Amino acid sequence: MTERAGAEASALSAELCMSNCITFRDLTLGYNSHPAVHHLDGTVRAGSLTAVVGANGSGKSTLMKGITGILKPISGECMVSPGTRLAYLPQQSEIDRTFPARVSDLVSLGLWPRRGLLGRHLAEDREAVANALSAVGLQNFEKRPIDSLSGGQLQRTLFARVLVQDADLILLDEPFNAIDARTITDLIALIGRWHDERRTVMVVVHDMDLVRDHFPEALLLAREPVAWGEARQTLSAENLLRARRFHEAWNENAGWCASDDILAPQGPALGAGGSSRSRDAA
Amino acid sequence: MSALYDGLIAPFAEFGFMQRALGGAILLSLSACPVGVFLMLRRMSLTGDAMAHAILPGAAIGFLFYGLAIVPMTLGGLVAGVVVALGAGFVSRLTVQKEDASMAAFYLISLALGVLIVSLRGSNVDLMHVLFGTVLALNDEALTLIGIITGTTLVTLAIFWRALVAECLDPLFLRSVSRLGPPVHFVFLGLVVLNLVGGFQALGTLLAVGLMMLPAAAARFWTSRVMPMVLLAIVIGLVSCVGGLLMSYHASLASGPSIILVAGAIYILSTLAGPRGILGSRIRPQRHRTA
Image (cartoon, rainbow over all chains, first blue to last red; front, side, top):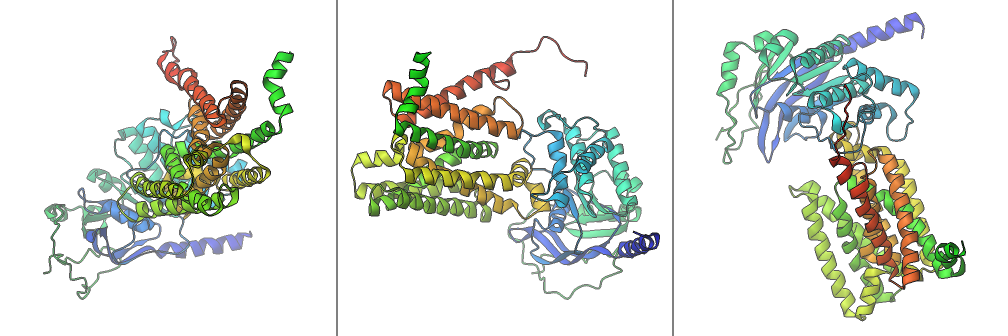
């Protein structure tokens, strides 16, 4: 590639970075017609780093599943811009720890987007796996069986797999659960690196101080979006209080939501909190 | 030396039916044992058993119309197995019911239907034949069929190997990067049915599961990687077949159960002596490393 073509390509990618990576349009996600994410509107810019916060049951994990497409919307839309390569680290991974696999086997799964079902894993792929492992501080762990890893080591291994996936959009669901402080610092640094590389990252986090210190943007969920925008502003005392009023109690007989309501006016693409329509409209 | 020859080689060298039995058993081991390893790793060991019952009505319908003929019974078994596998799979994927329960429901219906159909015609001897097979009576037709099934299984496993491993190891991850997860599950169930159907001429519907599961379960105690486990399971399957056939020849025992019992003996031995078995994990090393 000539230098000029390279410059053009980077200009193009800069332009792409300004575009939206994910667009929610009146998105309602849930289970058995009970919403877990209610009427979410807004966009996630490409290259942004967003913390998703909220109480238990406020719809954070559900939103992640909705973005990956594992959970289909009840109504509305969740559009991920076409061609986006996605990496998803679920809260409760369904990894079978008793499966006879080594650390390198688990991390190599991350090569799937590149090599697929039949593509041979090349020397450069093995190198990518080794580099990813050393980036998360697990040098020479390739041959360890996965059932011999501690919880924190497994989490680092999964981060290494995300690294290998080389994705444009990275979704991490409570990646810091039961992780010691030093490891959190390492993983936060890694997330910062992804942000610097202009990847779009969304992380479900419970530690508010962590969000204030390390995340530029935050989305505060309480089934409906309470606030969405600059992290410190979003996590203001007032917003947190509003979010706290939400209770996760699941009312079996909750009335039907008048979802045909006129859409509430939307603010700017970013920072437009959710409209506060009652689900007990009846 | 000649005692050794008489004991181990002569039966196969001198009798055509023993050669056929050996050939069929080798083909079945090559094909069913790897499938068994994946069944075990997916914690679906009992699914093999359920599927073996499930193919009965199909085989029985073939038997009802054509008598003891291999092609109709095989095709019938294949159809019944696929119907039950798909039915159980769809119920578990579309409702809250897990696959173990839906599989149990479908195979019980299927088994009852099968026994009913067999009892419409034929004596108990025929039923015994369907249930327990006769490896010593394999004809060319049956051998060809088993050969085709072995080829199909090995090619399919080679193609879908990576997806199968991913689906066992981290199904949610596979779903996030590929749409292959659900199809792979059904392809795999198809292989299970195919191998059970292949095995039932030789070993009968019930013992076919034995050759699938026992070598796999035994291999688990010796290694902690998938590929060596598959190869070891095949070796254990082959040893069981040869050992079982010789045992049945010399002691005039039923061939199918003999093969399975040899595999069973290897399993028991492995649970005790394998590095990941009872003794291996109980004996504490006197020394430990610094890190």
